[in-house]
Amino acid sequence: MPDYGLKDQVAVVTGSTSGIGQAMAEALAAEGVNVVLNGFGDAAKIEAERAAMEARFGVRVLYHGADMTKPGEIADMVAVAQREFGRLDILINNAGIQHVAPIEDFPIDKWDAIIAINLTSAFHATRAAIPIMKAQGRGRIVNLASAHGLVASPFKSAYVAAKHGIVGFTKSAALELARSGVTVNAICPGYVKTPLVEAQIADQAKARGIAPDRVIEEVILAAQPNKSFVEYPHLAGLLLYLVSDMGASTTGAALSVDGGWTAA
Image: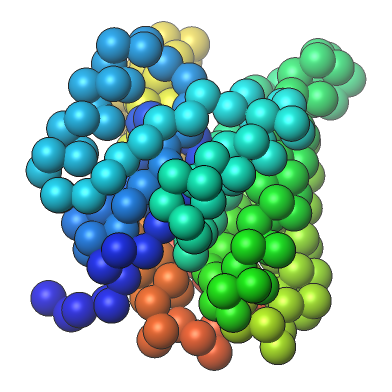
């Protein structure tokens, strides 16, 4: 295994109590990075996972329950990371939610929440992190976009708008920070078998009256030519490259990990 040179660095990972965010946090902790977790969920379960990660990897792991719709709480999360660890090296903007509906039926509150959590929270976290990273002369910001940051699907207007926004925000931030030692990149995954996707499979199977394996092949992975879910290690490998010194010249990129979805 390569040595990414990340030992004793500090990372904030939003939306990291499950799914992709949790996998990203664990990949960083495995490289000796101290991590600030964030997300919603059962308090006892979150604490158990935090303690287990700390014990397993021999790093410090904190939890901050910042609500990604509240700018003040997001700023406090970044400030706590700096206060507790004395630095901030890595910011992973991963928090996200989804809702599917035709535009004319799309609930306004769902639109507002998706834009706030999937897009605007990344602005607030990045805004708070930049001065710290600039003062250090080095930093790595990675935004979790999606294949839907590059192409569209029907009935996902808010999600597609937010993820396209993340890609644009990534590029703009990278240009502003190009000479600062701080890089900003976006990872654009295809479908990953997260708890959110697992629920979608069950719902689609019930709604369509077909078996879950047919939902996976004909609905969920219809756009992915390799017909395979993206796995957490595939995303973690790219993440570790981007946050290491090997990724120093990669900035402003929207990098696809999607089984060929956006190749066409």
